[in-house]
Length: 205
Image 1 (cartoon, helix red, strand yellow):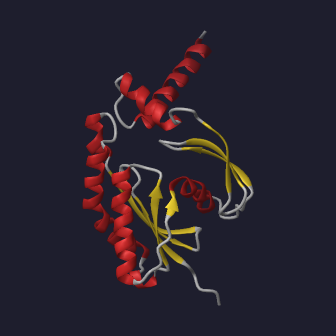
Image 2 (cartoon, one colour):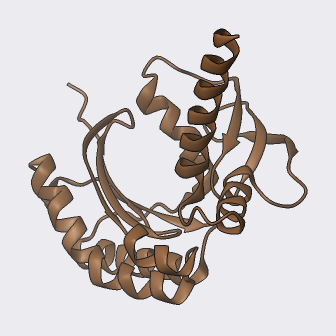
Image 3 (cartoon, helix red, strand yellow):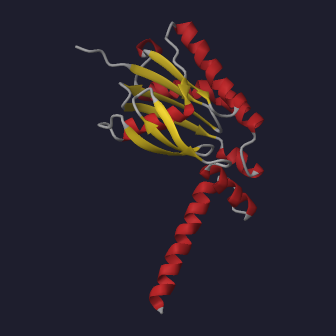
């Protein structure tokens, strides 16, 4: 009987410390997120140094909780898979350094994960029957790309924004008009409200 493969993923590329336990690359046993949104709201955006310090405070606690929720121990983990980039350098270093120490101390293989490829791989969790090849539109806070996924390990960027990513543009617009941080959800909510009001007004006349 084939053994299940358990990975412990560590994400610290921006302002959220997250640890997940995943079985066979498709089933999430736990996913613990420690968000820093309340901390960065007062600044109108993510402050890299503050983000890094908060990752240091949260990462051990988040890892312990992820293992507890998945009902597994480090002895059950087959690989530790931290994000190595792209992202905020200081924030990435916290997650990567912690992962290296955890892997070395417990004799567990370490497999670094590219942040963008991680976004693409999330589709395999949502759509468990999905297999390459397919086209992927990548729209995160710092990256907007159209990617041809040729295989699980082969990718080709077909197009991308020349300056700001869509998520970053949302945050900047929100800051300029006084909506605050994070901008994406607030701009989206306002747009839906205005669209709804427009439809009501249109149907009235």
